[in-house]
Length: 296
Ligand code: HMG
Ligand code: MG
Image (cartoon, rainbow, N blue to C red):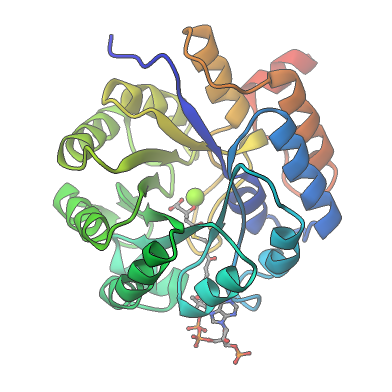
């Protein structure tokens, strides 16, 4: 079996986890959640997004979140456009994630631009961010299936990733937005991307809509991936991807990896404290196999 000794978990709960919940979580609770996740050992995290507050009111306190989150760990902010990047730079962000869908229809619904228009806007922005020595991650949505266009062709994913690698991003986070990929598809796509882009950090981002996300993590591990986006409590989902539910739960991935002797640096007891902290402030229930087991 092809297994790494160590895996990096990128916690996306404060962003992906909270952007799609009907409740708007107060800023101080979000900050306590972020701090509790950090205390559990999560050193790379999407802490918020600079997007339109009219489109995603849950993230309208992004500036205050950034102002209050100063440390040496990788605090990533997500943004789709020039305005968002300018807001991020103004707040002194050092790590920025841009996002684009392989599916044109999804990109129009999510960002109100075609995929080609998004790429055109982002190319000079990425060059500018790299000049300023900012860490840049590109999130590639609908890399397997689109809720509007159906099955996505691997060549289209490769072409989009190639453009971002050419523009100089540090990381590709390749997403199964609606949790539809199966482990075989995950293995093939991530094997291909590993082979083509050996010098770019490659991260897998699985949503767990159909209960296949942990199996997909294992398949991506076999393909050589050692970075995974996960969300504490299995929170998450994109408001503009019909039928998308939460990300694979951080605790379920950490438990599986640690059981196999793969180090994650995450303390499950402290992670549970973070999940308990956010639980009463969100409308959706926690979707975690590991924690529900320890509660029964
Ligand atoms: P638009 O309406 O076409 O934007 O929306 P616009 O350029 O015409 O501007 C309209 C208004 O929005 C203006 O304000 C702008 O200033 C403002 P007004 O004059 O009306 O007061 N605006 C902004 N305000 C704050 N921050 C900004 C910003 N940009 C414009 N960055 C836009 C286009 C991209 C803004 C909108 O579609 C949007 O905000 N979309 C974000 C959608 C989103 O957050 N989706 C979830 C994140 S992606 C995801 O979850 C997938 C991922 O997890 C991977 C996966 O699972 O697939 C990453
Ligand atoms: Mg997502």
